[in-house]
Length: 213
Image (cartoon, rainbow, N blue to C red; front, side, top):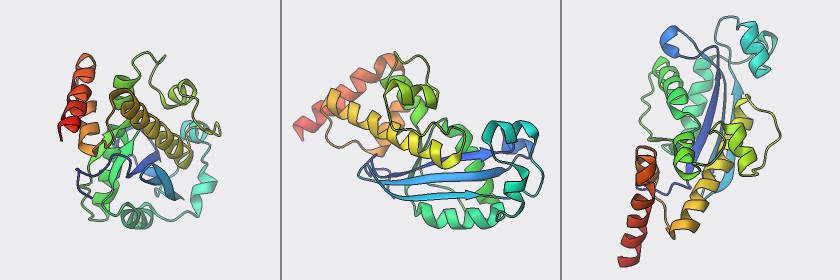
C-alpha cells in the first residue's frame, strides 16, 4: 500500500515478547492486530507463538501468558508466515512503534520475508496532539480520551484494539481541529517527527493547501 494512502486504512499491531530487544535474543510470544479500512475495524489477527524456550516468571506475571499456554502454540515462524499474509502491504501503526517494528523486522527476517511497509507511532502522534495528557502510556490515553477498553492490558489483541481506537481518535481530532478532510499516512509519519511547538503550523499549512486545491 502506497504511503500516500489514507492514515485511516492501516494495520494496527502489538507484540508480547520474552524481553525488550530482539538484539539480545528475545522473541515474540504473541501478536495481535486489527485491520482498519476507512477507520472501521474489518479484520483481526491474534496468535500465541512458541519461542522455543521457556519464558520468565516476570513475563508470565506481566502478560498473563504462561509457559503452559505456549507449549502447544505454533512456532514463531509459522505464525509470522500467516501474519505476513494478513498485512497485505498495509501501512502499520503501533504504540511505541520502535519496539514493535524491531520485533516485526526480526521475526520476518527469520522467515526471509522483507518488512518494508511504512510504520507510524501512535504514542509519538499522541504526544503532539494531546500535550496535556498526564502521560502518553496507552492505558493513560485510553482513560484520557474515554476510549473503549476491556481493561485487559498487556495482551496483544486487546492492546492493538485500544491502539486502533486511539489512532482513530487522533485522526478525528486533527480533522476537527484543523479542518483536514483527508489525512495521508505520510503526514502522520511527518507529524511524529515534528517538534511539538511546530505541529499547529504544520497542520494549518496542510489545511490551507487543501482549501487552495
